[in-house]
Length: 177
Image 1 (cartoon, rainbow, N blue to C red):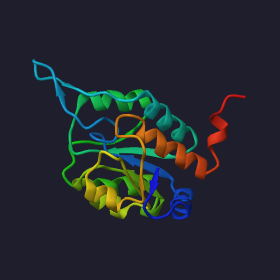
Image 2: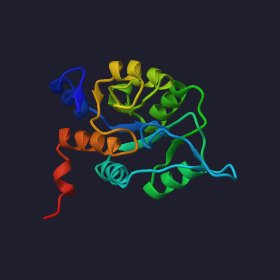
Image 3: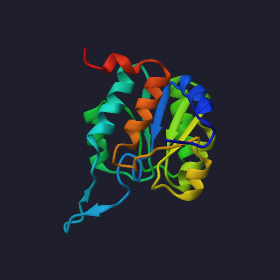
Image 4: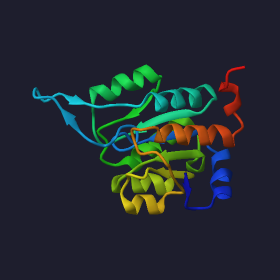
C-alpha cells in the first residue's frame, strides 16, 4: 500500500471507519467491459475481495456499492455477498453518498470509499478515508489517502478490508485457531 497522507494518519482515519463504499468498474472488477456477441455484459470479481467484504460486515461495518453503471451481474454479486446498500446507474455519486450516510446513521468521516476515476472524486473528497487502486486515474490516485498495491479486480478491495480490520483490531478473529 502507498500512503499519500502518511501511514500513521491513514491508520488513525481507519480506526473511525464504520462503513466501506466501493465503486465497481476498476475497483471491484478490473475495469474492462466484456460483452458477449448477444450483447450481454460479463464481469469478473475476485474471491479474495468477496471474503474481505464478508469479514468486514461480520465485524459490524456496513458496505455500500456506488457505481455509475447498472448491471444485473452486480445485483447478483451483491446478493451473494449480502450487500444491501446498492446504488447503481448513479449520475451523482455524492447524492448517493448522502443518502447512504443518512440511512446508515454515520458521518462522512466514518466512511471509507474506494474509487478509480474522476466521477469518484466528490465521494473520495467527502470520505474520511479515500482509497484508490494503482490502475486508477492519476488525478484520483494523487488525491487518495491510500493507493492499494493490487489492481482493481485483483484483490485491491481485500487489501482495504484487511487494513481496516487490522487498524480496528478485528482481523485476528478471522484467523483459524
